[in-house]
Length: 177
Image 1 (cartoon, rainbow, N blue to C red):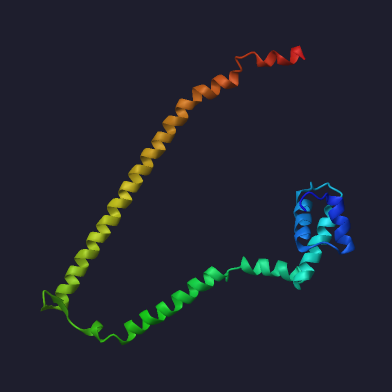
Image 2: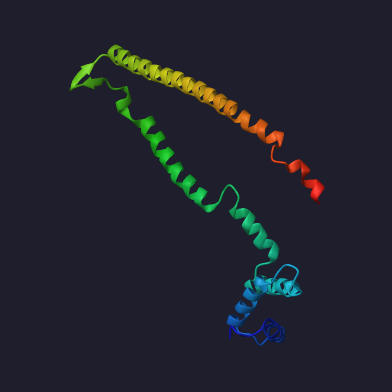
């Protein structure tokens, strides 16, 4: 069945005596044809018939493709659907949690709020120091990379100037033509 020629399959298709397998083979053979082939019109006819056989107009399939590429595609819908209940639960917990107004403890002994604030301030100061030191290290590394880039560019300059001099006799090539 696969050995039938393209004109034979087209003739059978237009007569309406092809099987679904033969139509698939015909479609695949038409897809293999080059763009300048005279069979491109037949390919468009076959595609239009396939679309109409599905019962979906061609414009609807384009709209469907555009919709699936839109912001609300199904994976994003699932992500939004998963995040919304999570936010609702967290908000409800924070709103109705009575333990937020309770006292803090260390080793089962209550701690005064001033001491908690003092420890929190110390932790935030340490975090700020970490951010500042990492920022300083970033700038130092950036400066070193910039210096290294300058060295690399300076080392490439002799190569660029020697290639611009054209020492290989290529300028005389047009004399031999």
